[in-house]
Amino acid sequence: MSESIQYELHELDMLKVDVADELLAGLQQTQKSIAPKYFYDERGSELFTEITGTQEYYVTRTEIALLKQYGAEMAACIGPDSLLVEYGSGSSEKIRILLDQVKPKIYAPLDISRDYLDSAAVGVATEYPWLEVKAACLDYTQPFSLPFALLDNCAGFFPGSSIGNFTPDSAIEFLSRVRNQLQDKGGLLLGVDLKKDDVVLNAAYNDTAGITAAFNLNVLSHINNLIGSNFDTSQFVHFAQYNDKLGCIQMFLESLSNQRVEVLGKTIEFSKGEMIHTEDSFKYSVSEVELMARSAGFNEIKSWTDEKGWFGIFYLF
Image (cartoon, rainbow, N blue to C red; front, side):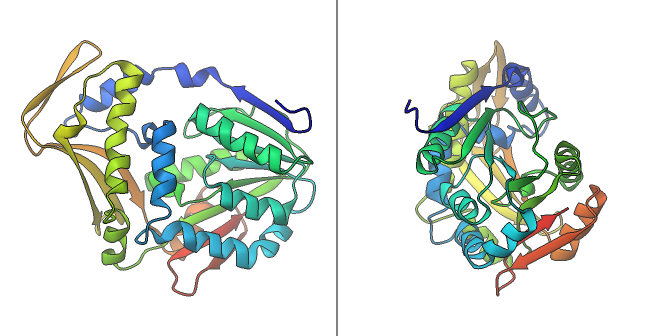
């Protein structure tokens, strides 16, 4: 690696804990489920990047437009010489827009997918040689301690409406952990997909190119590789629909036949039409985001939304 970049990668042992048990337990429930964090092996991360470029998936381009339009205001909220922690090493375009505005001292991306994280973080370190990049491979959906010291000025960045993958109660718990993690040294810049017409929402998760379907199915290939199960991806199909009562998009994999799958020495039986629940993506109103933030212990909230009111970026502090 070039000596001209400032980069280090930390790997936490928590990733090795109970992965097999968690997956097996989810598949043995009455409503079978796989946690959405298992979408993100290297291929899953690549497919999600492709999803963000589809015509139907407005989320990424709307958030990028907000970052470009209001980035200077967001940077002013964060302040100079900061430690910028990104929960999930996602869109390189988003973080570059923010880095150009904030100019932090240290950038710390956190992600469960080691290869994708390493590639993305090295790319940032190479492009910004003045920046210290301290990446950490970990499951940020679970409690953890940062493997490096805080600075006097810190900020979190959680874009892409990933907060929607938590249930509302779990989202509050996550936000509370972030607030405690950053202590009183800064706030969190949070991207949130806002409530809108369900026709728009359903189209966003059922793109005509079939990329979201491939992304959803890839989770089975990933867990086959992780724990040696024998899911046949040709025997499942993607299904996603907005649940108005819950206020969320729900994604499933539907079994196309009566079948048996071997998972860690256990036989998991599927009937034709049975669903594996793979993701919820909750949508919020601005007032619901503000209530959630205050419930997590944040006292002040600044927000920016697009002209359609489809997406919001919130600075919680």
